Length: 198
Ligand code: NI
Image (cartoon, rainbow, N blue to C red; front, side, top):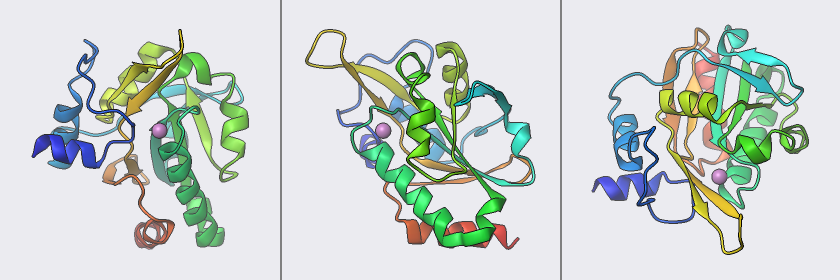
């Protein structure tokens, strides 16, 4: 059952990785904690945006914050979810000013130089964040977001299996909940409207 639940919300392509990195819980454990609301989700962070500026979660107080972990080489799930977020924000019109979407790369080594161009393909307010591998791991752990490298077919090539949920944080930085990957833009718009009206 646990494995099934974890797979349901899995953003990556391969099955659960056998070799869990030593600095995080297993994918099943993290998804279990998230599903059943065990422990805290989110918290303070300071990372570097696509323009090289330091950004902290505190910069976005007063807005709802959408947090999405992914990587620019992700073939399908990340771009589809980011497009759904983009369409939901477009549908909100001016009210979208009350929402800050944030993309945090789980592939900082490759992505740091590519973030600016990548986020430009989505909503104009989307901020891409990167940092050292240790900084990213710390933030991902705080959000119970699992990720691990999976070797590709060619030498040095790799993909990343990662949790693909969409996190929603409140105006004071509090955790509101998460949406499954592949949540449609209409559903997202509806949920954002609900929280914006509060
Ligand atoms: Ni992805």
